[in-house]
Image (cartoon, rainbow, N blue to C red; front, side):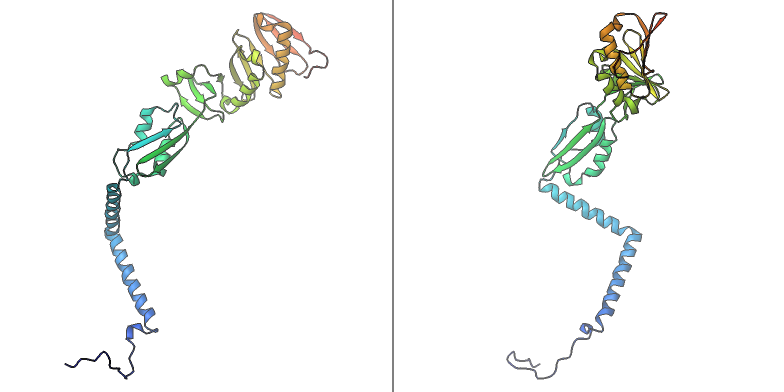
Length: 280
């Protein structure tokens, strides 16, 4: 058989290969895509796609673990009241597992479902550390309702109800009644505005979800008005300094009328009009 010399030149016009022609290429492309789509459909129906994906994922994680991307430590920041056993239960990770196998988003959602946790963040710190940051609820008061006690935050959300753990917070202010949590931050701010009176407060009782009665340590009730309760509380502080009210055995002090203070001592009732020029 003769071989064509590399130095020779073939003067004959070359014929273009048929499958490279411009008119044929779109047809070939469509045919190939059709075959690929058919194969993918078959693979999906038979589960081969998921199986292959799972195998690839496991192989990749195994390879990354061999390079040192494994969990060696879990760092937690911001935990004060969340029980460690509860946090461990929802985290549920094992040391030396591939760190890329950890789903930070799913783990964050499980952590935020814990009663004490307001928000959380979870991030991998490669090569081998998982960092968890907790933002816990801050209790401002104990709420008594239906014979039970609950911890509430400044937004009025219930953090925890009942149980022995709640006894640790017995020093917090006590609020009572339906609707009390939603308005607790406001009434507690009012009470704190007069520190001397606030020291004598036992509880704040929500009345008809409209106003507050303040139960004092000596057994007396201060009936605050629905409107401008802070002004009434300030008036009471002035009157107390002038008359040493809480050195007496009081039954109640009614502040609901803007132009007078009604004081009930034992079974006697006295009415005092405010001093001239005093803000009512």
